[in-house]
Image (tube, rainbow, N blue to C red):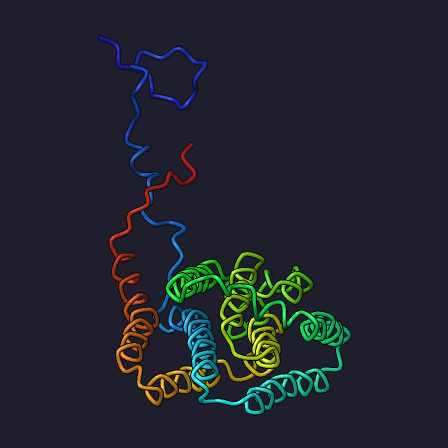
Length: 282
């Protein structure tokens, strides 16, 4: 009996082999995790800082609103906070001398100043709503804000990424993406309607604009880790000082899970990943 000819990887050639036949060269061409990207814990931890940064902003935002509603802060205190935040942004703009930053200020001014006229209307917006409805809707909107935020544009991440450099105008006009921004501002509008005076509504909405809309890339880009830790501990201390010890404990647990547990679990799962690919099989 004549020996069989060598098998060839050719579809149109008639060969004395079954259609599903392959020789040993096929197994030699298989590679496991040939193009799998390797991650390090500290790189993942640094990326998770952007989520902790946004969570801390939301916690600080809610704490300021609660203090205003309980009359623990007066209008002058909130206006001083607005001035500090806006002054910090102006200081960063003067340091960079960029036209885009000036446009940011002008766009924010066009929105903030009409709030003075709309403040009495916003104050009566949810007069017929119950407190439970306000709390439920605001909570859902803020959770949506954190979940849908575009974290690749976070100020605590690197400024040299291709995604950030590709569309700088989109990042400045819609901080975090349209869905996250709209959810945060709608939550701020609903919460502001529960304040006592129209002046407080205006000051609180201005505070929300400065927190969620104005970009904070200058300082956070220079000191990303320090910025996140200062904001985190400030939010934590604010919760403890106002008596929300359970909320403070939950805040610490959630941030620990995001910053420490999640990267560690991701690396453990990646060890068991087996992606088989055929490399240069001819």
